[in-house]
Length: 277
Image 1 (cartoon, rainbow, N blue to C red):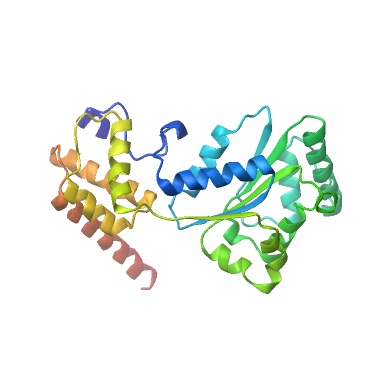
Image 2 (cartoon, rainbow, N blue to C red):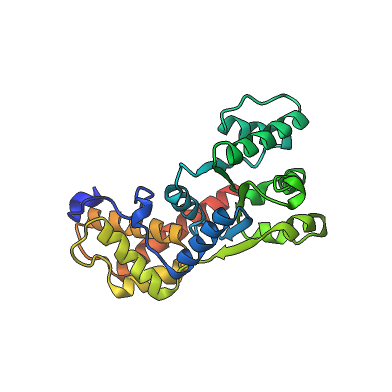
């Protein structure tokens, strides 16, 4: 609908954009540099960021950039995992049938990681997403994932990804052994005003736009509402595009944006009232 009306090659502001065509903001470039360093040096890192700031996009870009002849990418995203189930899931992704007991599964994991590193000349890159939701026992277990040969060498790159509260949780004395082992930490924030303008233009150009669709004032209004958070930008821009299609208007100005934001806030308020009625 959007692509046809605006004569685009594809629909902008979706997750379907290949990682090779992602907008490279200054913070995103720095984030990717840190992630690649973690991989190269087989380190333990933490990536935090607000909801919708682009953490998952960064992980997807990292995965797509890895040489799979040298690395084995393992992605975990299950906040309900207990230590035994955690090792079992790791082993399943490594193609190994896990033992029932946690201690046995843990030994299997260690053996598999070393075999991957020494025999296959590959490094396991383990990403634990939504880590801010993990229970204390699971966070404690993550510390042991980095214990190889009494810290003399690590055959694995480990990355925890989560919302800002993860950083607060790890500041607790209970988790000090984890924070002491963290080599790299990075917080992914929102785009600045000028970068958001470039981001919107980049998304539209990547979709095949030949002329501006959003006025400068409309982009300023979107920035004021979204604070530069990528997912929010995508949602508002998509809603504006759909509204423009319905109205058969090719240019989106502040009137369109104000209408969309008013409707969005109205829906949110109705949902809030319904939940407490």
